[in-house]
Length: 275
Image (cartoon, rainbow, N blue to C red; front, top):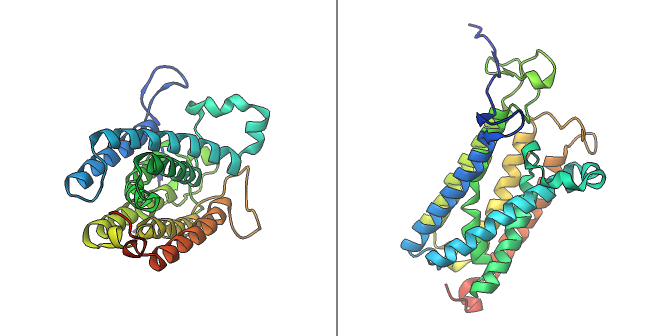
C-alpha cells in the first residue's frame, strides 16, 4: 500500500510580529532545553550528584547559556560560513536569520565549564560530566525545531515516510533527517547519559568519563545521521566523500576517546580529588 507523501507546510513562527520577527519554535526549543537543564541541575543537587547549590546553579547556567550562544554562533560562521562573517561582521548579531553549530556550542560550553570550575574550585572534569548530561534535551528540542523550520533536510528517499520540503526547490520526497537526528543525538544520548549518572559510580570514581563518552557517542550518532542529510549547498562535500558535520565529528570523537583514556588512567582516589 502506497501512502501519500506529505509536503512540509509547518510555520516556523509561533506568533509573528512582522515578516522576519516573531516568536519562533527554534527559540522555544532553546528555552525548553535550558529549562530542562536547570531542572536536572536542581535534581542532581538534591540527590547528592552535584555540588552546586542554588546560587551556583544560577551562575553556572548563565555561563552555559553564554557559552552555547556565543560558541554556537561563532562555530557556525567559522565552520560553515566564514565568508559571510568577514564580509558582514554584523551578521553575527542577526540571530533572526538563524545559524548555530552544535560543535561550536560544545566548545563554548567547555570554556564556560573551565571558567566556572576554577571559580567554584571544583574538578573541571566533573563539571564537564554534569554538563554533558544536560546537553541531550537541548539537542532533541533543537532538531525537532529544525524539522518545523523545514531546514537541514535529508537526501532523496523512496520510502513512504519521505517528506517534500518546498525550500529544497524540487518535488522529490526526502528523508526527515532532522527527526532521525532528534532521536539519535537527543533521545538516545539523553537515555544513555541519564543511565550513566544515576546507575554508575563513574561520576565520582572517574571524573571526565561521562563527558568523554558523550563526545564519543555524539560523534557516532552525528556521523550516522549525516548519511541521510543533504549537505549544505554552499559547502558541499569537503573531500568528495564526507561532509563538514561528519568531518568535525571525527575530531570530536578523538577528543572524547582521549578524555575517556585519561579518566580511566587517573581515577579520582589516585588524584585525591574531592567528590
